[in-house]
Length: 106
Image: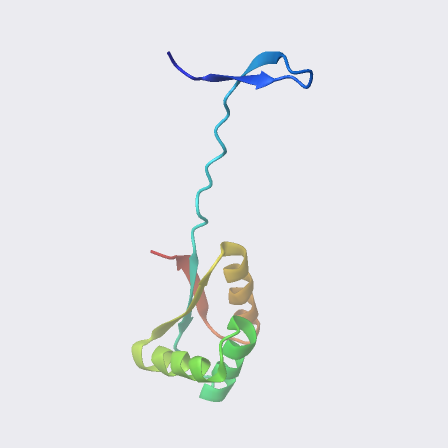
């Protein structure tokens, strides 16, 4: 016999009408978005690193490492976050003439 319904006890001790069992909604994890810093030959290292600290909220040490990585490899992953924050960070970097792209993380 299938148990698609459950019997609920009424406040007076009797039984209430049958109510369907409802499974809790399943949550899908939000997909992360990668924020990528691209190399440019225009801006100074310290300017880029300070922007990374301010917008990506990385430590000064991590910001300098990512700045050097972008310089050497052409691109560096700054962080993975939700889409709205990634878009905001991208816009903030653009206001300073820095190139940051976002893409769904793998």
